[in-house]
Length: 430
Image (cartoon, rainbow, N blue to C red; front, side, top):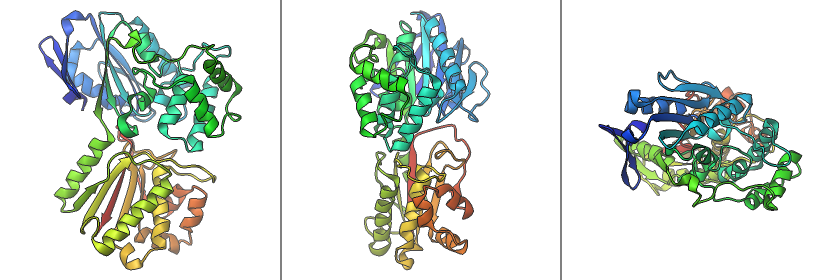
């Protein structure tokens, strides 16, 4: 996708924007610097290297641990995800240092992909009480466990960061900046992808404070963070850069890949294989176990009535659901959805259920803090659970989907895919 977006025509770099091509005269620049962060960073860096070759004068790309690949002209470093650690802070400091060295004769290619919010972590330090890494990690943990959606989580994280919410663009000014963005956010909202380091921040201090209050975590987050949010609302701390800020006058942002593209590719493949297909879009959100009920209802209707598709049928959808954690189990939102689907199958007509197979998986190969991308659900797995005397309903109550599917061979393990465009659900009825 990076190679498709970039083309060299002599000394002219042509970038395929969503509204048509845009060009930069490379003779106007002394340096081409590549900076990047996110789970897909290494593959994106290789694409940039293929497209620009020795025109690249240097660069640094931070990726999730285990996602690095060899790259000749661009240094690849690893950092933590989903909870930032010291390596995340080091990555952010190094990228900010390179950004501040860029001048008006520097062209900076910024490679942005999902996971960048944790991988690039620079705690804000301009309040009365500077934030620490542990402050940011604690807030991230609370938000992830609260059931907040990603755009809400990132609205808070942007305000606690010295690099997110347009802060990287401010550090890069007056350089020319081209950001190539791989979206892992429902609706491709630029300010939420990796918390929008090169994008104006539409949210405010008041929005961030309202989010932590709405999810009931204000009294559980570190005092330094709550004090900063209150000071921000009171106008005692500067807000993030907003639309119209001169920091963005030489910045171009381009989404080059998304969940919609992945889902439509799956639809095309399903048709090739002879399935009647239905694409439900790429904006599926909500509680994972509730979304599972919706998919199960469609599957049963299809099996019983050939509606809304005739069998053999394949339904494809994408997005990013949430899980409100109430138990002490292990899993992720995709495994939770598959387990809820399995519980529903256990209560369904057996003749219909045996014709249904469901998969929910993360395109990055990681679902929650596990080594699985997601999980399958079908009658065979339900029977395996019964033979092992395992109760799917009990495991669901404990949010313990990983252990149920690990014991029944229902996990999808791909390893790191080095890309990240949200989640996909695939439903087959035969």
